[in-house]
Amino acid sequence: MCGIVGYIGKKDARSIILDGLQKLEYRGYDSAGVGLVGNGEVKIYKDKGRVAHLKELVDTSFETHVGIGHTRWATHGSPTKMNAHPHTSQSGRFTIVHNGVIENFRELKARYLSGYSFKSQTDTEVIANLLERYFNKYGSFDRAFSKTLSRLEGSFALLILDNTNLDTIYFAKNKTPLVVGIAEDGIVFGSDVIPLAGNAKKYVSLDDGVKGKATKDGVEFTDFVGLQEDIEYKELDITADELTKGSYPHFMLKEINEEPSVVRKLVQEYFDEDDIVINEKLLETIRNCDKINLVACGTSMHASYMAKYFFEKFCEIPTEVFCASELVYSTPLIKDNPCFIFLSQSGETADSIACMKKFNDQKFPIIAITNVPSSTMVSIADFHLDLHAGPEVAVASTKAYTAEVIVTCILAKAVRGKKTHLSYNLEKCAVAMEEVISKAPIIEMMAKQIMDASDVFFIGRGIDYWACLECSLKLKEVSYIHSEAFPSGELKHGTIALIEKGTPVITICTQEGTNPIVRNNLVETQARGSKPFVISTESLSVASDAIDIPNVNHYLSPLISVIVGQLLAYYVATLKGNDVDKPKNLAKSVTVE
Ligand code: F6R
Image (cartoon, rainbow, N blue to C red; front, side):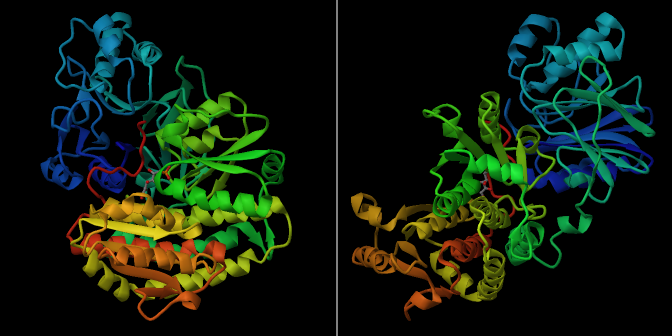
């Protein structure tokens, strides 16, 4: 949600910023804008709609080496040109882009800015005018900036231009990510490292409470008061190529196709022959706890159900899965000696971060499992495990789910500490995934049969039910068809009333123990007119099943069955002509609670 890009240096700022904003599109947004320094002034271009539209608006006739840009996902005020960033202070002296939410902006406006007129409904304009107020009072930018920051409550990543000093970009960060890339020819800013790819070789992921200024020659970091900050530079390991679709029509399809290589990458990263390589202190922390609490949202929460299975089955530690947005307000009784494991692709999900901070304050051990090592969650947690899935650009999460299931499985096996054949079994999964992906034409046929449905149900039991949850979420996200997943035994307790003639019921059968009973439950829906589609493993399949998938270890089966669900969702969405990589109303990084 919302994206920031900035550049100051020797290259063309216009293309770096506009291309960077395009790379951040995956985060979700509804308007976009840039402020570019040219001919001694800041020229602002902004509108609602896509970055492609912004590109058409921007004048290309002037040279520019300094600028700031933004994609906005509306929170305060509707998605209009007026509310799009950048915003300027009343006199036009300060130009600002902002990610985050200023919680006390109404109070600041009423208390300190009564003489100021506002053009937008945003909280950001309050920051610009506050800066101007304090500049007018103190006559020093640094003092005015520190004073402004001291007044702000909430989250912010800020880039600021000052009309009277146009060879500097000022920045500040609190609770919303901001990274600073160091290139030979200048400095690049981004709300994550993705716009830095191809532009910088190393970067700094700013801590909360850091501000600074960048010129074409370098960058200075201080705390909000102005004292020097120690900064840790990291190597940027994302290449520009990883951020293109390559020969695929969509990122979602590319990322599904990458899943077998994610499995192999994880084996490479976490295994030395048959031995698992994970920080011993982390393993001891889990061994010493008497309960594991898994916290996540959406797809990551669905992967957490598998993780619960692994921790209970392999480590015999009671484990509970919590939906982060619920846990933060309805915290259950927490006794004795728990540890908290957070699963998140982005590492920026506001609901999960709110929980993480709460339990971190209470001194419980926190483990973050994320795909973004520069993320906020990693900076808060005591331990971090990387998902190594590579950048996930499509809004609908696919390969990160696979990585979350695998990393938690590896972790559980490592906590148990016995010899494991997991690396061998994972290689078998990678091959099985390739086989499923090669059956894409069969899945596309299924998609044709369900694309006109108004409701789709997914049913299964146990592990298959957890896979159903993820398949159903995928379908609704990108196809916009109403879909629900149910434990198949639960249907008779109410939901079966919704089955009508032709309602698709997609059934996952990969577990020998539950296969007969799940099939019975499907027959019950067929008696009410449902259109059945069974996804079954080869050893359990019967002629009428829609697709069979290779057998793998029973507890790894969602890695295979969910790929069918992901491809099904992809084909339904594309057959319907939907924007599958950027589904309506959704954002990749959900950075507001
Ligand atoms: C679904 C999806 C979302 C995310 C959820 C949590 O395709 O992408 O449900 O899984 O918003 O995001 P992360 O994993 O980044 O915490």
